[in-house]
Length: 278
Image 1 (cartoon, rainbow, N blue to C red):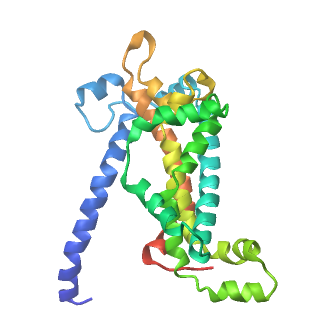
Image 2: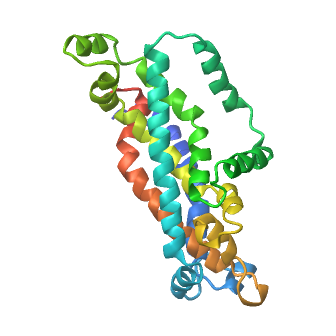
Image 3: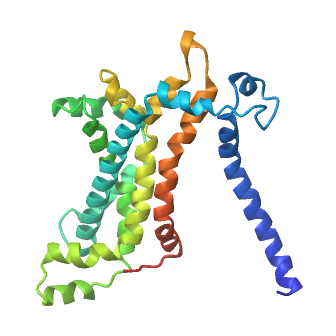
């Protein structure tokens, strides 16, 4: 490597290292804080724990009923992810391959939901809708609402369709496939990189969702997910603030996201460079 290339690359590497440090700093602080006592966290005197409090994790796990809350979070995240993948991929396939009336209106409505966000204002009508179909005391109400917010996934997938030649559809039809079997047997395998990234983001959003599970589990505490359970960890006996338990629980809840990212990392890189592999 020449000196000129080193001079060009050095600022780039420095910028990347600073960016990585800024992104990792909150995670490191949370991880170290999960091993501290509440007094150490409150005073903030030292970066490293004076004495590593490993019992914080045991106490957090037992006090928050992590086994039950983890199952609920996995239940919501897995079914919401699968549902979003199915709905977004089938919708993108129909929009990209079929000419129908109202196509532009459908795309407009999908894009409209990306730029207009009214947050908690829609909670009441969403809850009323779930009441009308009898899902106000079920995690399926949360799952259906998360799946309905699939506009981002739709546009990610439809962007990939542009890289898949329509000649494949015609060849499949000649070989005896119909419109539906062409999607399931030919197109869907080619969408694996895009679907993996959609799954990563959907799983993350569903796993971290707090407001919806809180609203739908007000009368059913057994349906609470991990974010709701973690919020309850903040106050212990006598309403005393116990931030160390909350940080320990947060570190435990990060593990499933890291596992999902490890599986989807390769596909994420493929989407980043815009490649399509079957």
